[in-house]
Amino acid sequence: MTTENTQPRQPAKQGKDEPTIGVESEPKAGAKPEPPSRPERSAEPSRVGRAEAIIRRNVLWSLGAGAVPIPLLDAIAVTGVQMKMLSELSELYEVEFTKDIAQKLVTSLLSSLGGLTLGASIGSSVAKLIPGVGTALGIVTIPIFAGAFTLATGKVFMMHFESGGTLLNFDPVAMRSYFKQEFERAKETVAEVREEAKSDERA
Image (cartoon, rainbow, N blue to C red; front, side):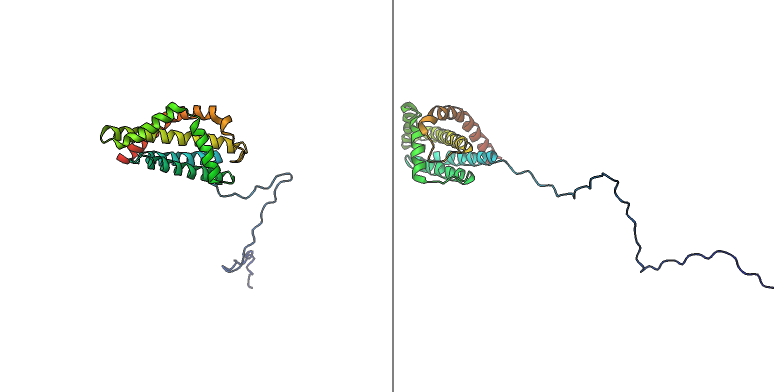
């Protein structure tokens, strides 16, 4: 008499190729779904930060232009740098740029510095014709004046553009007092910038 094997049968193993079905737990009632993660973006500089970078870059150009050893050519070079700066600021603030208008406004701001300051700068430029001491004096003095004038001009126009102004409604007479204050501050700042630039060249 044979005895039957009464052991329970083992369930058949799933083949390797058979798909498995996972059961996801349902979110709890009232729970808000998590938003998909987004890649982090590097913080872009503000418009003011970009404007200040434009001004600083052109101040460095003015320092180089002011060091041109030939009188009048230094003034032409500095004027060209300032027109370039105002063109770049106008583009940043989406303001229409007209070179003739910009030159008139800059000339008006320059006249607000007074005859003593202008006379000293012109004298330093002409002194470049004198060999030796005159050339050295002009190469030291004119770049500081050019850099400070460019920095103060950039600051004044940046403030004007930030308030929604344009070249057409810029009032150089109303800006004269503020411009003179910025110019006096800029002389110290530009002297420091020049020393930093020299240190970077020697490094």
